Length: 443
Ligand SMILES: NC(=O)C1=CN([C@@H]2O[C@H](COP(=O)(O)OP(=O)(O)OC[C@H]3O[C@@H](n4cnc5c(N)ncnc54)[C@H](OP(=O)(O)O)[C@@H]3O)[C@@H](O)[C@H]2O)C=CC1
Ligand SMILES: O=C([O-])CC(=O)C(=O)O
Image (cartoon, rainbow, N blue to C red; front, top):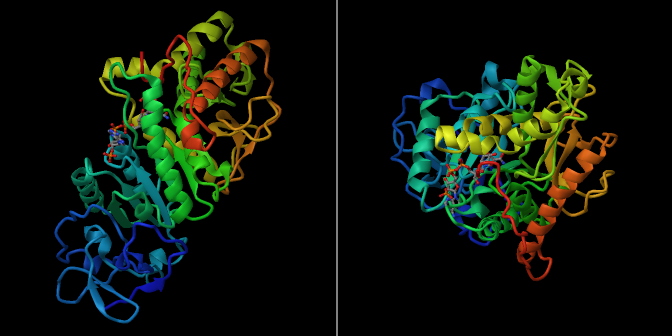
């Protein structure tokens, strides 16, 4: 029977019981000889506690080996991912990097359904990076999460080494190095934006606290669930031990949409469009920056002479692309959102090409553009590929951009006031103005 290596958790959840605080780190590789083994029945637990386990020789359910040598039946990990393996024992996997843990919330939702398979395939972190997926759901979705885990099992991804499913963020986020926060309540008909901010804000406040308590201290957090900028702000405010710089709100989908629209108008393929900034909020006030974007290395305005289209048609088409898609497709962008999450992560883990940049919603703290501090605001960034980023500080802002950026900034400041009770900034006061602002997916 192969043994797993014991590690002691750095931090513990207030919700963990003593048995679930035992965590054994897996160094073991699921070799092909084990693939035929009988697996335990699907998990019906409502929380997760990962203990790696070993496989008994007589085709019984996997069992966990505890530090005192006693054997404990493993219930919480999922199916085939409970099996043990030794990455260093086989030629093909010996040179692989140390496994990383990635948490995904809303893991049974539409976006995740596309994203998880890209993560597991190696398309995001590379072909030598084994991963563990920690899937966060709720009582609503626990059955569906089992279905997701079953599909991951059946995909036989060599790089996917562990899958845990659970409903308690304090357990699911234990030691994670990436947290992709996708789950959020969709805004229903007639629901005020203020109500959405409050309901979803509570989810992100709780998840921020959980990350703060149990995640890797340098965890990178990407907030996708809407309204993503303010949710990211709430999350980081509730995680004071994690650098605020590590939190992002996803505006990469907007960047990709903007590149596509410019390419269409210019009659070039979209790989010719670069330096595309989305400024501000992931909402209909966002500002796709055609002043600084380039097509074939030239300023957009030199390539597209229809400047009225740039200011009106282009800008609105990007701001409302999500809504148009819902009209056609009947549901909000899921596949392209998943692709943009992949792009956003890859932009942080691979060096940015010389002269280019990417957009991401980041914490404003000493920015050179005069944008209010203490917001999560989309801006141009570059990365050395180490998971971190630097702001691009010398982008030109003209009057057109300045006015529109100020509108998105005002919107975010108003959103921030609505959630003051969740950020530790006092009593909330919610006045979002006479016209309720929209998510890109709303019309
Ligand atoms: N930033 C961006 O560019 C984009 C952001 N989005 C946003 O991403 C989020 C997820 O989208 P998508 O995957 O399509 O949505 P789905 O509706 O398919 O899934 C969302 C998941 O959110 C979870 N959830 C959390 N809290 C609640 C709640 N109170 N009520 C209902 N569900 C809840 C549910 O999972 P569970 O039951 O497990 O909690 C559900 O599976 C949305 O907020 C959407 O607006 C979408 C597109 C682009
Ligand atoms: O509004 C939504 O849920 C969808 C969304 O963010 C987008 O398409 O950009």
